[in-house]
Structures are given as C-alpha cells and as structure tokens.
Image (cartoon, rainbow, N blue to C red):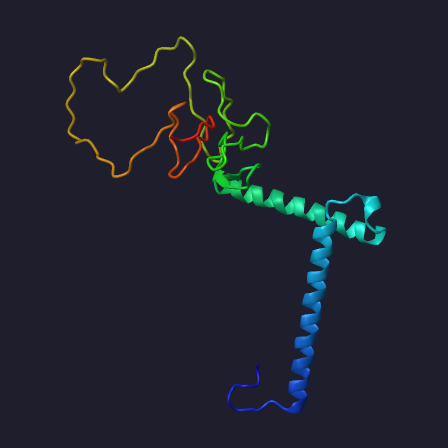
Length: 190
C-alpha cells in the first residue's frame, strides 16, 4: 500500500477504499477469465452456432489474432528467422524444411525428404542480403585456386576451428547446431 511509508498510518476509509479497489480488480479479472473461456470454446464455431451479439466480437478477435501472427512473422523475418507452419518452431529464414519436425517449413504438402536429384527452389533471402553474382554461361572466369598439382606457398598458417561443421548426408548443406532435420532437403540428421 502506498500509505505504509513509515510516516502515515492508513485510515479506516483508506482501508475500505483499498478493499473496494482489490475487489473490483478481482471482478474485472474474473470477467476477463470468463470471456477468455467463452472465446476459446467458441472461436472455431460458425456464425449460426453462436449468439449473434457474441459472434461479431469473436470474429473480430480471430481477425486480430491473424494480424498478430502476421506481425510476429514479420518480426522474425527482420531478425533473419521464420516460424515453421507445421510445429511453430522458430527456424532460420529461408529454410525449406523445419530442423525440428522435418516438415516443409512453408506449410505446403509433400513433407519429408525430397527425392535425390529433385530441383529445389531457392528461398528469398532476408532484406539487405546481397544477391550472389553468377557469370554468364561460357564466360571465362579467373580463380584464386591454383590448378591441381601446382605447389603453392602461403605465409598464412591454416586456421584450426574449435567447432565441428556438420553437413547433411543427403544434400551436403551445412546444418545448424542441434538440428534434427536438414533445412534444405528435409532429411533426418543421422
């Protein structure tokens, strides 16, 4: 209570007003709880199954829920992540398959491992990611990698990494730490 600061004792009126406020807050909380229970029980029903005066509010809340889900997906996209449409797990943006449940991350049918040799379409990268440049067919390219059999000397010693990079046994894509399924092809991680 705001009155117990050591200088002023609450009066009987203060105690009564505090009790009234607590009781009114409890009533509002219970009404909210009742409304939440009613909404959960009726949100999937059609217009004829729910009293007309309630259906308009239920429909509005359903639309607001869809908006909230859209805003949340946009937030994840801006963070370089996305949500699996099947299980709701947060996964790296552009994943073809969920690394938690193995289903297609976009919610389309045809979940599971893609057949070997199947053409995969590239996902749209997050905003701000530069597009890779590919030389035209037949163009001569120069490479910093010398031909096989050429001896090279380097002043820079090889760098040893402390972490092990795991790759998909099916398609060779680099796997995220702790992935149960490949994000590129959907294969179960061995």
